[in-house]
Image (cartoon, rainbow, N blue to C red; front, side, top):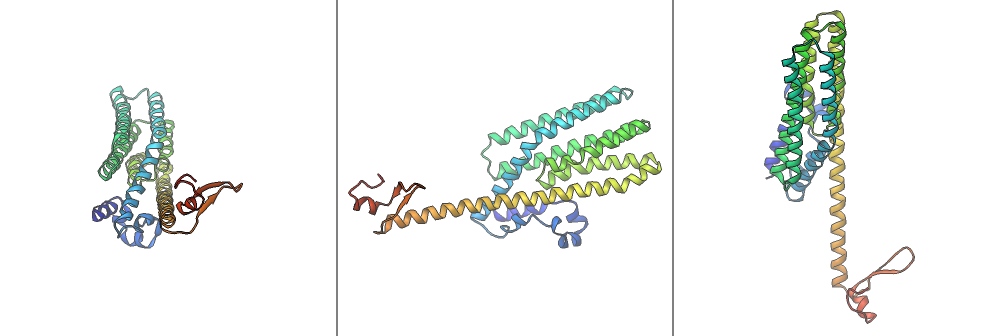
Length: 287
């Protein structure tokens, strides 16, 4: 079971892990999630930690996805209003694809909410989230290339600004790294193709700026994901520590003749051990 998780962790990485293996080993933000790596080679409770980390990341993504969906739908509608001269079939297909992807996302979120949230359900939900993000981003990338062919200077500028403004959505729907990458790369690729085909000096000068901007956004997503995982892991360990302490305390009071009691801030008795109850002539558990 632990090996199955390790394989998924290795797959759930960015293109940088493949394209720049030397860089990823040296640069911490592109390494494997440190919180997950801390439990990657163990079993038992640590396997549960990893599953809970994945659940927490997925919960954050689902919670923010609704706002992302609203932003994409409103932006797509506004884009169609601006492109009145474009052939209606393409605009209808574009808006229809955005709506269908959003509906598929709603169905996926509800199906996950009704599931037992076991390992299989979590894996399936993460894969579907990544696929839907890639489809949504691809729709925008195709729109950027298609609409950019017939755009005048003003519309071309608006189109570029829209794509650039949608890139930070990867940070909003984080912290699942593969979902954020899937939501960003196809869309940015379409914008880069549009800028290159425009051929104007300003367009060519914007190419490296867009690449750097996207890189900073993805770096922020990566760091946010690490922070989220470490926060969830710390919360789980604290909860386990409290549970262990409570069991040890219960074993102590059940197996010792010493008196053990607990009072509130005003000195009133809140709990007493069985040995104390016996000494006071009260029933065990009545204190």
